[in-house]
Length: 136
Image (tube, rainbow, N blue to C red):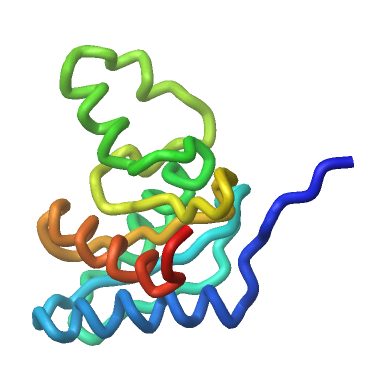
C-alpha cells in the first residue's frame, strides 16, 4: 500500500489566511477557495465586496487545478490555442486562470483557487496562499 500526504485543516486555514492577507494588502475583493486532491471544498472565504458569482468560480477553478495537478490557467491557454474539445472534460468547470495546485513530495494534495479580480491577480493571490505552506 502506498502512502501520500494530505492537507490538515491547520494547513488549509494557513493558506486561506495568507491568500486573504495578500488580497487585502492589494485591496482586492475576492473569494478564496481551498480544496483537497479530489476537488472537494475545504474552505471558502468571500471577502467584503466580492461579487456573489466569485463564490462559485473560485471553487471551480480550485477543483480544476487539484484534479488536473496543474494551474487552472494552463487549461484556459490550451482552449484558447484551439483545443476546444477540452471544454467537455467532466468535472473541470473552472478552466480559467486563478488556481494553483498544492504539491507536496510530488503529490497533488489540493489547490487554492481565487476569483474576483483580473485572472492574473487571482493566480497571484492563490500562489500567495500556497507559499504559506513553505517549500514543497
